[in-house]
Image: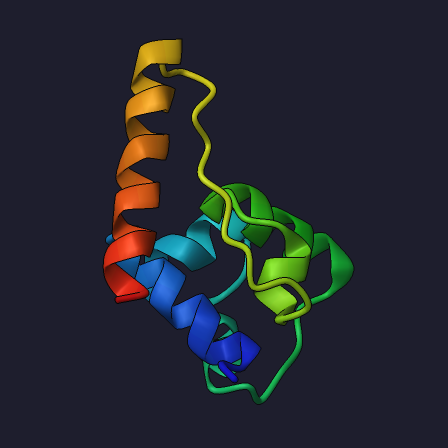
Length: 97
């Protein structure tokens, strides 16, 4: 099971962000982000909500309650969403072989 700190670090790196850039978005210091990633501190509910918004995931996902990662498709056409769903199903089938 991936802990919160590791999940946060992974999401931050996937987004191409430095700890400083994330800290700036959250209005906190880089060292606090580092403490979160090392699981030495836990974010407040307000910071947790901001992290979920920044990375477009649920707070439950960040906390490891829900393994489902969501993808924001709000600015895609219906055809684009259908293509994504087909791709996802193809990958699931490939991984279940």
